[in-house]
Every structure is written in structure tokens, then in C-alpha cells.
Image 1: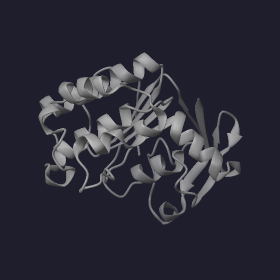
Image 2: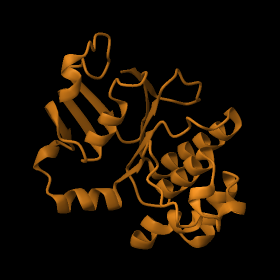
Image 3: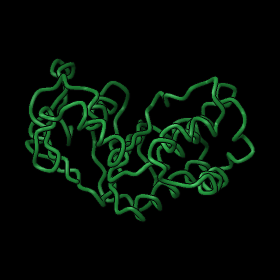
Image 4: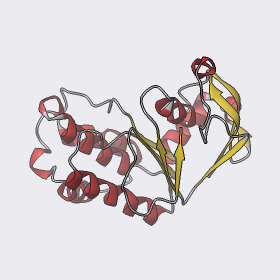
Amino acid sequence: MIFRFEQMIPLPLLEQDTAGSEVWEADSLLLEQGKSYVIEAPSGRGKTSLLSVMYGIRTDYQGDVFLDGRNIKSFTMREWSALRKKRLSIIFQGLELFDDLSTLENIQLKNNITGHVSNERIGELAHALGMEPYLHRLAGILSFGQQQRVAIIRALVQPFDFLLADECFSHMDKENTLKAYQLIQHECEMRKAGLVLTSLNETELPDIDVKLNL
């Protein structure tokens, strides 16, 4: 799976100064499966917009985006649904959890459709991120950092060739950030998947293939 951006920029950013951006100022940019990318930028520079375009939920941009050589604007809703089910996974900045469901129920939402992992594996992932004791608590009463870990686990229990992660460590301490990142990296390596991670600040995460300023 390869994303290719040809002079692509979201329309709201056309009025902004994007000088120095390695994404918005690029004539052509490739994001390739099997590689890890960190997109660093302060708020308002379009990090969420970039991932939203890649996930097919934002279409207000100038230029072209190709997925495996095909312009993504030609994809039907059915094709996007299939991509999101089998090939693209995302951790939204806003997490998109259901407060009135338990941690486990939130994690199982996509897995109930795909049957990708066992409940035992869900327990192992929860244990790895210190969330096993909270599996049966309502997501709405967890701290935001704990909710981020729930969203990460949910994204990992579905099939994917690319994982899109939007500021998914912003409310975690260094120890939990490293644990979560290492788990994400392990899962991506096992699947030979690509990773696009956005961050507000300069990151100190190991084994990143490419860092891009936005």
C-alpha cells in the first residue's frame, strides 16, 4: 500500500503560510507501507486534516492523492468501507469512544466485525498497556490518558496495512508513551504495515524511519 500526494493541500490551509512544510510544499510525497513516519507540527497546521484525507473522511483539498496508483476521489463508499475494515486503521485525536460502553466493549466494536483477534489477545494487549484492571469499567469515567490507551488497543485489534495515529500519546507520561509506542511498532512490524503518527512536539521515539515537518 502506497499513498502518493501530488501538490495536495487542504483548502483551509491555502490562506496560511506553509513555507518550510515538507508535506504541503512538496510537489510529490510518498508514504509507503512498511515504513514509520512522524508528522510534527503545532496546532492548526493540518495534521488531523492529512490523516482525515488518507482515511477518506475529508475531500476538501487541492491537488491529488493516489492510493496504489488510483486517485482516492474515485473510490466509492463501499470501497472506503472495505479499506477501513481490512487495510486502514485509525486512532482519532478525539478518540471516538462510547462513554456508556465498557473499555472491553469499545475495543470489541471493530473486532466483532472482523473477528481478527481472540478475546485472549485483547486481554494481552490490555495487560501490556496496564488497562486489564479497567476492561469492565465504563470508558466515560477513565482519564483521557487511559482512554487513549483504549483507543490504541481498539485500533490494533483490526487488520491493517496502514495505521494512522493522531496525537495518540498527548495525555500520557513518558513511561506509558514508550510502552504504547513499542506495542504499536511491534504490531506494525509483525504485519509489515505502515505507521503515520502525528505529534505536536518534537518526538523522542526510537526507530522512526522518516520525520516530516508540517
